[in-house]
Length: 63
Image (tube, rainbow, N blue to C red; front, top):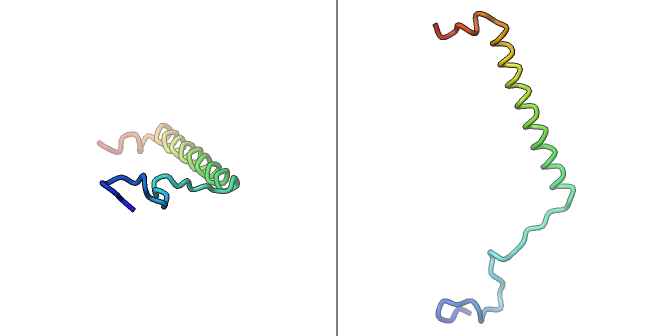
């Protein structure tokens, strides 16, 4: 029940106060997936940079 815009007299919890807890394995899996994706992206970008460095045609593609 809201009186004068205050939720102090309400018996229902505020939805912003609820905490969504996940099992530890879900958090670990998501963390590992993000780390793996980041490492693969960096390695892929390094391979592209190395390929452009080694291939003369790719270095002068803009001309």
